Image (tube, rainbow over all chains, first blue to last red; front, side):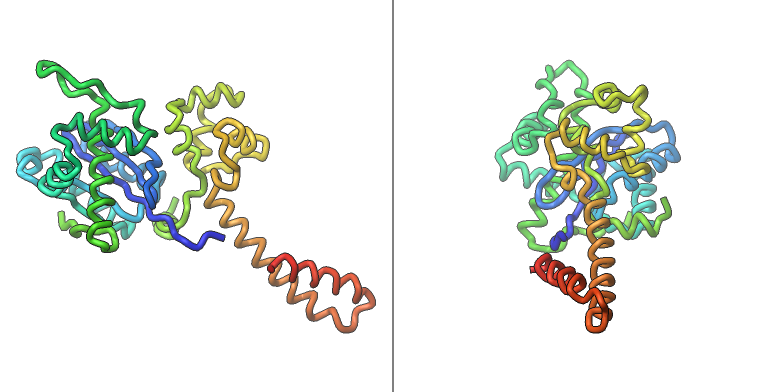
Length: 175
Length: 121
C-alpha cells in the first residue's frame, strides 16, 4: 500500500468570462488543464464545484488580488466565490502575487509570457502540444494562453514553496 | 457527491487517472469512445468522473491504449480494494488461528496459516 500521500494543487486563473485551471499532483505531475467559460457568477460557481469534484485538490492556488482585480469587478467577485466554495470543502487557499511571479520568472530568465509558456512546455510535456505561436503585436492573445497562465500559477506555487520548505501555503487568502 | 466524501479524498490518490492520461494524449472523450467501441462519449465521461467503475474488459482496454498498468491508472480504487482485502485476510487469519488446535482439518489449516505468513514476509 502507498505510504506517501499525494498532494494535489488546483491552480485557477480567473478572467472576465473564463477561468483557466491546472491540476498538479506531487511531486511534479501535471494531471489536467483546461479552461471553462462562464456568463454569470453562478455559472462560475458551478464550474469550480465541478473542478473540485474532478480533482479533489489539497490546495487551491489563485493569483492574489491586485490592482487589476480591483478594477475588474467580475473577476473579484468570482475569486470570492471560488474561495467560498473552497472553504466549504475545507480546501486551503494560497495566493501568489504578481510580484512573486515576476521575480520567480526573472530568476528563470524568462522575459515574456511566451518565454514562460515555452519553458513550461519543456518542463511539462503534457501541455506542449497546446503551446501557442508567439503573436504579433496586433493579434489578440491566443485562447490557449489561459492554460499556461494557470500552469504558471501552480508551478510557481510548487517551486516557491519548495524554497520556503513550508506546507504549500504561501499566504492564506482572505478574499 | 456529498461534501464530506470529497473532503475525505483530498489527500488520497484519485480513484482513477483516466482523464489525466487522456488529456496527455490530446484525445477527446468522443475519440476515446470511438476507439473503445462506445457509441457515445457518456460512458467515458462517467468513468472519468468516478461515477462508474469500468468493466474489466474496459479497464484492460484503457491499459492497452495508454500503456499504463491498470493498478497505476486506477490508483485510488486499487488502494481501496487492497485495504478491504487485507482487512478481510486479517480477520480470516484470526478465525483460522482460533480453529487450528482442535480441528480435524488441522493440517489444511496449518498450510493456510503458513501461506498467510509467507505472503506477509
